[in-house]
Image (cartoon, rainbow, N blue to C red; front, side, top):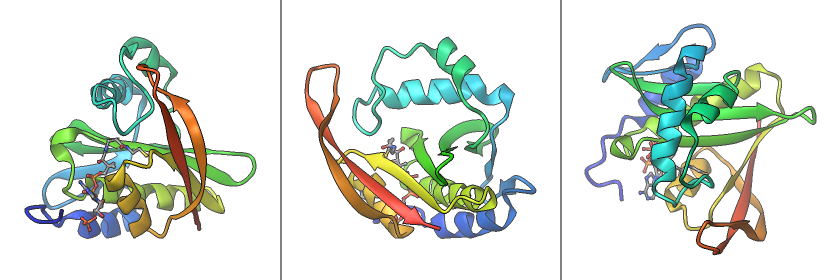
Length: 183
Ligand SMILES: CC(C)(COP(=O)(O)OP(=O)(O)OC[C@H]1O[C@@H](n2cnc3c(N)ncnc32)[C@H](O)[C@@H]1OP(=O)(O)O)[C@@H](O)C(=O)NCCC(=O)NCCS
């Protein structure tokens, strides 16, 4: 799986961890990880629409109302990866009053396997710690081996499985694995 992949992840991640809250991080290959801004709304929605087209890793499926999604997107807690100013990855942390933060993420298909996801998870963990959260949690489809491996790299552990939890547009019922990381 790692063959032919550019091992940029840990380098981007470690720098992002140190710098994200105060400054955007600029990696040597030009990838920037920074907090999202209002002007990013449409780019985020378009990225989600393109990942939804895959009908594989995220719960959202077409058709996506890009305008509504852009308007409704919660910017606080959203972190972005950009290449040459173009949004190529996104992660969001949704803090609960109970002290944990729920994570969701996506990387543009052309940019996967190059450490972008790693950089985003590292940045999200830093963001969650800075907010005083005690834990980050997420849900992932059991077939999503890339995402599960990415989360396990950071120490996330499987905490349970929701059976036939998500009804897909074609009627299939997919399980969800719950994963968590104590900070
Ligand atoms: C899951 C996702 C975010 C990973 O992003 P990415 O930028 O490709 O991740 P990275 O390149 O940083 O890879 C990090 C680790 O993930 C794992 N990984 C990545 N691609 C993999 C693949 N195709 N198969 C198995 N493991 C994989 C590896 O453990 C890798 O670490 P390594 O480089 O040390 O081997 C990306 O595939 C994606 O956006 N998928 C579609 C949306 C989605 O599934 N979102 C998550 C919903 S829970």
